[in-house]
Image (cartoon, rainbow, N blue to C red; front, side):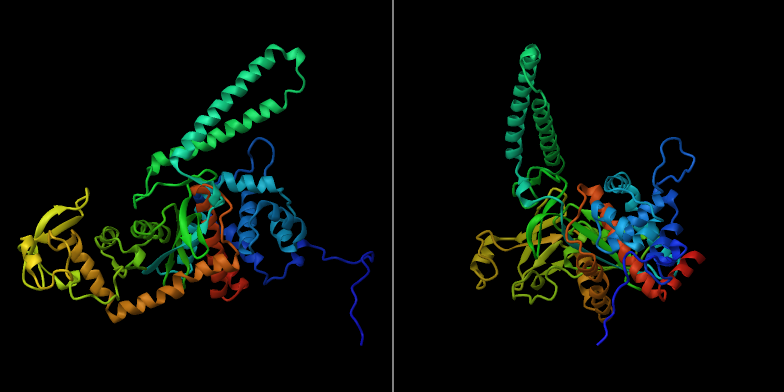
Length: 484
């Protein structure tokens, strides 16, 4: 059997005369190049001025292309991107043989976080112009991603206060030693170690003070009443739970359009749950698309009635199941009690009245209704099943309870169920793509602004892949982009 052998590495050969011939016309890198070229960098907040005074810098368009294309293939770190621009032909073609080092790449990403965050918004507007997004039905969901900080750096406020006191004492000691050395400078040897140790102590103090400032912003305790933990490495991250366990991380919020499953909005929040996110995420997506939606759909974690009311009051329809949706109600469940709006009271299954007693919270959202005469409950044959309290049965009612019941009944309608069924195929697809295809289970940047920029890049990468498929390949995508 004959074998195929490669050429002699020292053999002279005729290479393609131009760089463009190294990359085929249907290579995906051409789609990323055309997309960035079509963006309005003024809207991103990046100034393109070739007549700037000073040392030359890399073209921001080329640097953004490098980040988008690198992230789309799971190459996210600045050192790996530097390696690709030297070794990978598609990267070399994209960068036109520019070879920025890892520090330049990292600095561009760090200094342009705000601009990178806006990239998805511009991408969404391009999708609208290409009729790939309708913006009528929007799906909202979230996933938890690790922060660039270990769980071992989580500490309570008392720990930070003690550490701050210790490091301040150490800094005072080091400064005193520096003064002593200055007095007897002629007798001392090297003075390099002392300033280095002092700089490290001051840096530690800054990180501790930054962590303590987070306690001032978010409070010493969580909403559940537990002592709050703050991560010293990334103070803006929170403790989140995921299938991989408990760790420091962020919640990546995503809004997806129903027509083709394209992402029209993304955000990263440092909240462990999604109860306060529905209205703000829908509003952000509408700003990107440039039009108001007709229906907002989300899972039960977004069922906060105050958030739903914000959307419903704007004329939109919400499709959100309640936390108890689908669960079998017991004989003495709240649904077994009848509310009388005229008298502002509840009637129990035995016909006894539960009257308003007090507001349960400071915002006056929750109202407590208790049995009119406690003895009625104690003498009732269902005492012990309905309630065990000697004060009698209590029912809690939200001031927006009628809206909650309306949304709950609407969810049972067949047409609404069809919309909710599409939710999984639409909004959960991007999360699988980001985590499995792009290999992003953890953010690289720290701080909320940094992770928001990363989330925008990841969402844009997902959209570009979908757009290429929807528009008939790379050639169709480029033709559509250039025709806008």
